[in-house]
Picture 1 (cartoon, rainbow, N blue to C red):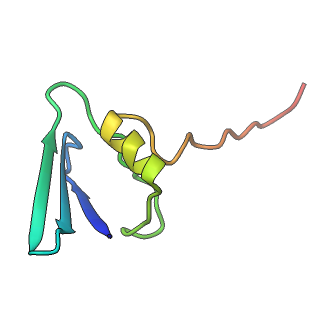
Picture 2 (picture 1 turned 180 degrees about the horizontal axis):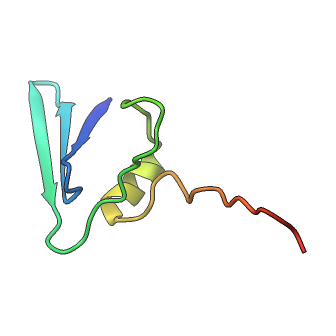
Length: 75
């Protein structure tokens, strides 16, 4: 089912809210030294993730990929 994922401003804590057939459950993860790769340049505050992207987020990888490169000239 759907998960609702929230990240704090410091990007070191995640809360995941989901329904487990008997009620809402809350899963909490806090990183000691690193930060989650939470997207900052989105057109809206809500977005969908695939299972793979969610796994990448929880593992500390960039879930949406790298920013596109823009070149001013070609050699």
